[in-house]
Image (cartoon, rainbow over all chains, first blue to last red; front, side):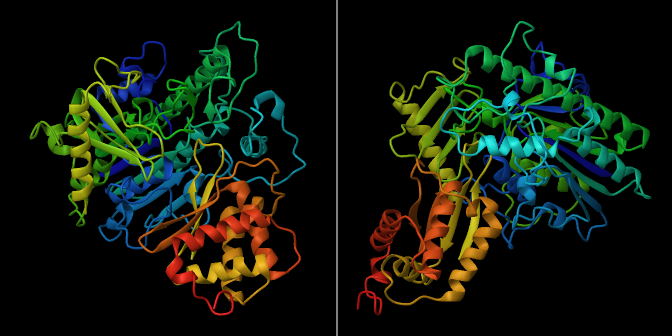
Length: 431
Length: 137
């Protein structure tokens, strides 16, 4: 048996056809979802990019303990747990944060391929390469780094000829190449971590005009400056940015489809546990800001898609409303492979849920940004405990107010207190 | 002592931290104080290690020109005996200039910024810093 993990960074829960979005095209993931266990209430535990990978690789909560940082030498990692169990493992990724000096997230994998050049990755250092920065950049008068980052990105991708060169295509093609090269198509553990559809939102044709307004005459702002929307972007520009993002989502779906078709040819589709998820979503001005300039723990960031396709059809075609978290990935993979869990894992295997053995794993989902804010939620309420000076705590009724626009912290103090106590109790008991 | 990237995704500026243990806070205080007042001594190897890590972890921007109208975010925090200097990427260049002034007295740096950091350190670690030979004893 094999495990194939597909992560696509920054994929909003509501930008998927199978989750009820009736205008976005994600036919390949919709198809995969129809044959898989789909988790409707999956939450990202530690935000953003790097802490989420730490959670995936350790099965432990990060938000009370650590933020954006390298792995600790004492961490017991998923790939290392499989190191002496007869598995051949590979990580293929373009998430350059994992490859920065001292980060070393490749620990434990037998094969590693870093695809360089996404976002601000200082990969192409040739200053003589001229890039059309003015075509894609909109400043706000205070920007210190986004212009430089976008210039770097445009240099990195200046040699691209078409869709096959995009990062998501490169990562998934490299994954296929690794699978094809395996003489034994069993006991394989492939970790594909695609940074797309993360910004810059520059999908190639036809994706770049798939959803945009044909009457829009403004710029393609592919890497907006994180911060307040008001005073920076017009409503038309904001809409255009969202549609460029949607185009990149469809591009990713297309290449996931190419990947899944090919692994069918390789005979791996029906003897592999296939997992698709993301690390977080993307704020597009719902609370006044774009990107992750504020550490908001709102649904648009923390509520994430999770699809698990079991080769024996466990949970196939079912949607589960149990609360689950990114901590669950590690124990689920080990449970599937029949490998004993290391001690002190916080997550729980999803397999008992998928088989119908249990109906739920937890009463609440917990998540946060280290030292900035924590959140606890069930399917009805979310409570956010803010640590930033002067920022009040937040309480939202997720059923009546799914966009989390009306903070009820002063109206329903009893519920807020109940959830705050639950959150503090949970963190205090974590070891 | 360790220089680390602490935030980088979807925000306007990368954030870095430098962690100093309880014994190391004295070393960095002596360096900043020497840059400011040219009084006392400091561990040259410690300074070399710190600047090397800054070049390695932050990258080429640490050698750039500090912007003039920069938002001031650099500050110290203490937690459980660990002292942490937190700063946005452009401030890394300003801090490196302070360190370079300790290596080569006379080099230009932001004296007000350095004094603020020294004052904050004294507030956070009076036990360790208020009785140092030559500087204040």
